[in-house]
Amino acid sequence: MWRVVGVQVVVGVLVALLAWWISGRQAVAYSAACGAFAVILPAALFARGLTSPVASVNAGAAVFGFFLWELVKIGLTLAILFAAPHWVKDLSWPAMLVGLVVTMKVYWLALGMRRVFYPTSPT
Image (cartoon, rainbow, N blue to C red; front, side):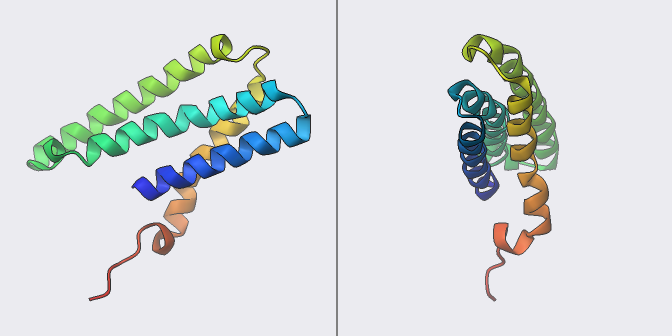
């Protein structure tokens, strides 16, 4: 789970740098980074919540923990998106959405490349 978050960080940084390189404007890069941040921070909290010892007490606690942390993840993502215009002067909504969507697509990449993200131990 933490590998996915790590790759999301790398992808978020790359998207922000690419946005800066293409546009030549810092505000566009910050906007793309803010979109990536709206995925990365909630995903990191979600991963932390699911890997805590409390989440593995029993099956009921695991299911409840999953839904609780998913709700926290969605709420935090929305809070970051609503706060973005206050954080970034001259926010570029298209750049922010590109940062959000591209960083979110890492989940699909992880699903398609399971052996890279979730290697099996040799038996």
